[in-house]
Amino acid sequence: MGTDSVRSSIGKGVASPTGELSDEFKRRAREQWTDNPCGAHVARDLEFGTREYFDQIEDYRYRVASPWMKQDLPFSAYRGKSLIEIGCGTGTDLLQFARGGAIVTGVDLTPRSIEIARKRFEVYGLPGQFMIADAENLAFPDESFDGAYSFGVLHHTPDTQRAIGEVYRILRPGSKATVMLYNRTSLLYWGAIILKRGLLQRDLLKMSPDDIMSGSVEYSDTGRRPLVKAYTNARARGMFRQFAHVKVDVRQLSREDLGVAGRLLPQPLFRWLEHNFGWNLIITATKGADRS
Image (cartoon, rainbow, N blue to C red):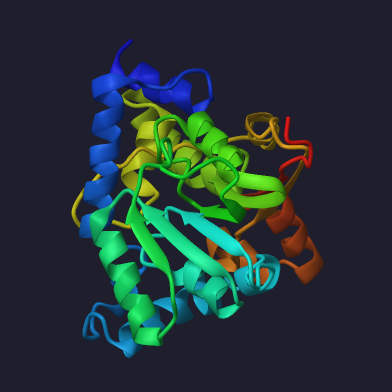
């Protein structure tokens, strides 16, 4: 199977690459977030590693890019409990869990991300455990954590289903996982990727939708092309079928995303669009209490 057909099929959850192709995708991911650490582009004018540097990244994430996150995500739900973030990046979200009293562990495929996340926690004087790890093969015993979190990460790993299985394995019975995957039925996917890039710019004549996303979705000033996949609500639910209860919410749409129309839409209609056609699928999955 060629690279393009593999990419197309894994986006639909049909197959996952193995061997050299899988390693190639992971290499690209490490290069992408080594060269472009998560959120760092908004603080490039500040001294790296300072409190002001990290404050700028945090302010942009929760005030500008995704103001709904502080209200809707469970940053304060794990006081005194163990929480792992899979793909912690530079530690912006993990810091919120730590501030909420969680005993946090951050893992990431990219050594540079782990280095920055450690530095961030040192700057704010908060404890945390950090290690380099592959989401598809986590080096933790079964039932190690009271909660798991992964935001915008598992759709970049070649075998997303295996990574979800690892999330299930390391969670204690009754615990929850919160995972964000990109939404294949979003306005962004069908507007910016399929219509604009795919049809109007004719990219679909030479590449798959996943390849278009690879070159356009993640911020990069170095031309890296990490693997990027998107999933329908139904497909996402199916991938979490091991869990006893699965809830999927749709978020992440700004008025700017809608152009001129975005400024004119009444608030109730805009919110309806966001909760049905936003870019993020927020999956909350609860592991059953039965240890069997």
